Length: 211
View (cartoon, rainbow, N blue to C red):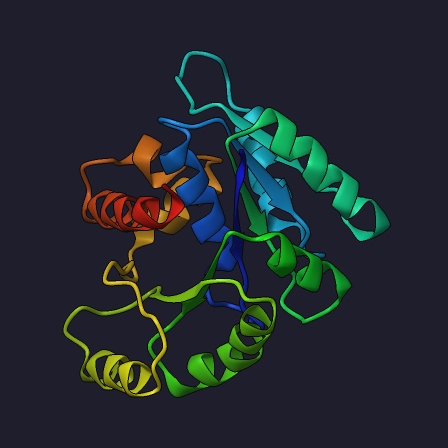
């Protein structure tokens, strides 16, 4: 049975698309993974096009891909579930019909936030929708400084509110953006870098929820 991982956040700039791409590459090492881009900006679609256009000779993780949305989304999800083990959805920033469908279909919801009050406030609508659909949702810090006092403050506030925050976090590292700009995941471009180590640790943590 296929597992659906939906990445959702109402606030732009939280790193939703980049997280989908890097996790897709990480999980493709042991699963048949498909990426589904239903964000109108289509940034994940452009990343996949860069990937498909890369010259032969580099071993890339095999990934399925679709950007079907709207009234065809339900049928497309059913098709992907038949052919893949894991579907990662990059959902729209606004809570619209497609976003609700993506959350309703999810086995797990990830909500990336930068460690700041506006990001947490923006996540409230997504978390409420996930709760109304009875879907497990976890916040994950992205573009976060390990030594930031604000990060510690935000982590404490999240805990006080009874929300789930993953222990793994991604720092504000150029490696993530550089790999993305080349159509790669960080695990392909620089697996032994700080960015690669962070992504691998986060993927291992998420893997525990997908089993």
